[in-house]
Image (cartoon, rainbow, N blue to C red; front, side, top):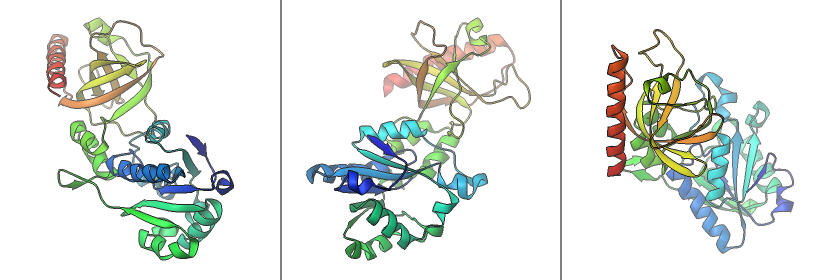
Length: 311
């Protein structure tokens, strides 16, 4: 997949371009429906499938205090897009200057003059341009004048609920990673290099990998989770603790992610691993003694094995 940070000159590089518009945070089932339809049509017509998105998230520029945490890092989003068959990503830097572009100006200057898009794919609730005044209906209105076709993808529902990044963020903030996975189409995950910790887990008999994920990424609610960990292409079951380790620290300790890999032998320091959250086992709690904590960890490991075996 080719990545560009401008729309200028793209029409000359890709004369038959189909474009999906959106932020695509999470690349969830709704996004996958849009991308799948676009890629299938592009392949059937020997055209190029592209997505037009932004970095950073527009809300971090327009209203930083209310900007949502991300479901995926930019790198993870790019990798998913490529696997889904997207050939070109237009990852446009979002600025206040860009935010002032009106909907008609966007259609004329970006979609028509810059991209020469023949087909445009959008979600049913997509908005664009100054103050979000552009809509799918507006794209339809100007389609004949600018020579493109508009494909509006209807909402995708799971168990009676519309798939959305907002809903997925809510579920993750509640720790319901198993339900979030139904809307994402994959288990939510974090990817990080393993950093040095205080080695307390090793002294307790449960060595842990300490993670330091990208800032701005949404981390599930505090608690203990059954996880699957990818290490250099191999998968291991594990138990992860997200929280402030209240048994050892009082007050406002920094949130921490520690993962104990089951049936793994080796040194993970400095290695990049991917931790997929499969199910929340329990809330984080403070134990009255280290022995009580060790007993609970043993139970958590047994529960994790049972839960993952059922799936």
